[in-house]
Image (cartoon, rainbow, N blue to C red; front, side):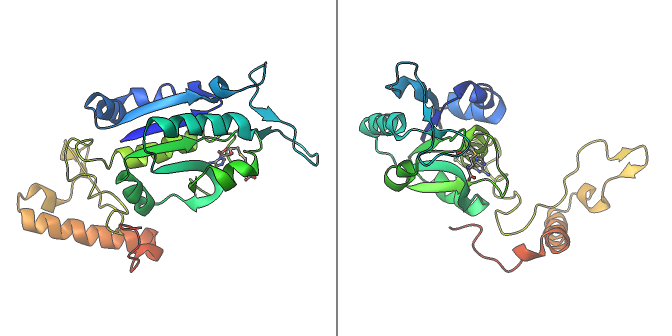
Length: 231
Ligand code: SAH
């Protein structure tokens, strides 16, 4: 998979992809991530990316010109499956959406800033719009990092234990059961006996029951929904 991220503030994403699981995914060659400074494509002599909104009003709007030039250049390099704009009014990110994007080859992710982008970008250049939640951030970079992380950890080989992504919350429409590690008794805080029993069938049954119970208590709306894995 190849992910191109277009940003007005690329340095915001400097460290995110350089640590831990996402770094390993890149060094294993499972994903290539390129964060591009949109200013490269600015035709303005001061390399500006934004301008005043037509009709007046507060805030600045990102111009269609550098964004169009950037996407055109990247599309000429490789077949792009989706050009995603991070936007609070986009489709809400879910595990189902992350699953379906993890099956794609190449993605471009556009981060907005200021008031957002000229509407013509959305009409003509974007194939998908994704929100990470019903709140407004000052830029799309954090949202792009969230989306990329959710997608990349699903790529085969990225997580050390192949089965661990499958047992995560939401993957089967349920929240994950609780986990414990050593010590088994920490100052009287003990671990459920069954996990120490070595009896795998009983352990699996306990985990399944805990997942059901936790989902019923915390997110009852997830129960009976079947759209989390496919999308
Ligand atoms: N004026 C816009 C908000 C712009 S916020 C509106 O009212 O809808 C600036 C940028 O931050 C957006 O262009 C988008 O890329 C990003 N952003 C803000 N909140 C986001 C969210 N919840 N999900 C994804 N991206 C978001």
